[in-house]
Length: 274
Image (cartoon, rainbow, N blue to C red):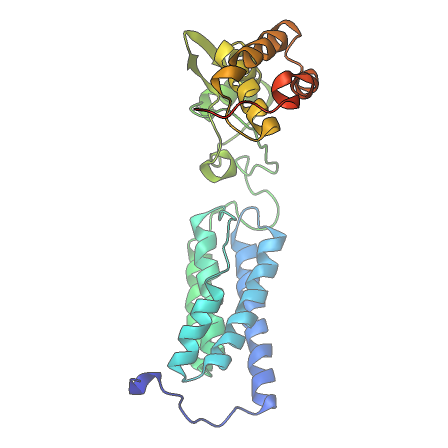
């Protein structure tokens, strides 16, 4: 095994030192959250709490790793199972997350000077580049106190679709951002199927239901499931009768299941295929 993966013999830190580092990490996390709340237009309360907890957790992880490289790789593998699906609202929020991580790591490693200097530069830069309308209370007419969330279909320009209506009811408005639903997993339910166009989930269902092949496929697969085998040539008349009854009966699945159980193909064993 390479030497750098070996377990380094190190004296564990006293409990008092560990507690002090965690408390200091919490203080730095709270300080980052304070700067975030003072420099952002609409700070999220849950995000500020996350910054404090993140600094504490990173400080704890850093103390667990210590100088042990093998332990660091083990923690990376263990933490890789965590998946984050929440999209960060603004790229500046990402900078505050990285700041909480860096400060927690510096405190956990005992580099308090690095943490103090880094936080000082962060605070100066954040306040120096702060938007003139950020902070407590509206400063100008451009400071919009309300947020309106609108759900639109894919491919629709939000400014074109919503802009004229907002202009007629609001004295000032601004588009903050636009994103696809479910992080891009939304589906555009519109298209054409066998010459029939549809738009929306209801129209899609009606278009699919109107296709004769869909009903025939449903009957055939339910018959196979009920009998436990693929239909043979001698069972084709039974299957055709079930398809016809299913169409004329209004496409009721419950009636189809009853007809399958009552059919000769279900009640009698078919002759083996030659």
